[in-house]
Image 1 (tube, rainbow, N blue to C red):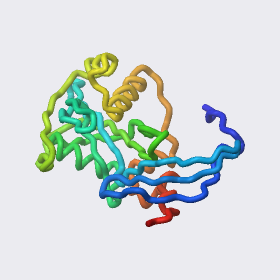
Image 2: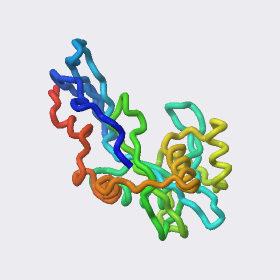
Image 3: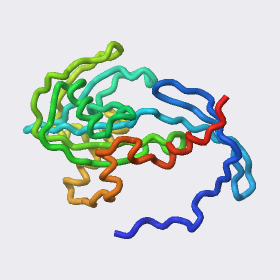
Image 4: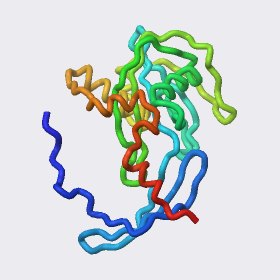
Length: 222
């Protein structure tokens, strides 16, 4: 399968300067001043995430999906979603999601494989998400919630999860993407991950600096 077409010179922006606006242990915000090649000048505000997003479709022997329920503060609503979380700079996505599955669901898995990769909101952030499929589940001793977490666990049949996505009941982006990717695979649509991308599922962030994240190294700091 051939790649989708791309312009010869795809980047129309000349960056004049980059300025840090805010930084916390989890997120950072910067403002870039740019000149567009069609003449416009302006500012672009970019949100960066300091942790690597990862999630896992953990399937049991009855083809049920392990779901985690929790209150999502920005949405002011309760959300059912996959075990997921953020890996720090010392963890590969694989290491991070194994830890999250143990901490959130009290489970470990014998079989792991990359499922999908995507950018959750590419108009405002360079965040990347790594999604896995895990099977042959067994209990883990690492189950514990953080001080600011109240989690419920539930196992839902895979097909019912798809119905809940279509009805708008399940809306978490990593969960929606992962379950629809697995449904596509089951329907016969398969394509191997690019080899370099597949390696990134098992590498730490410093071993695969993404172009979007690399831009933070050229900031004019206050």
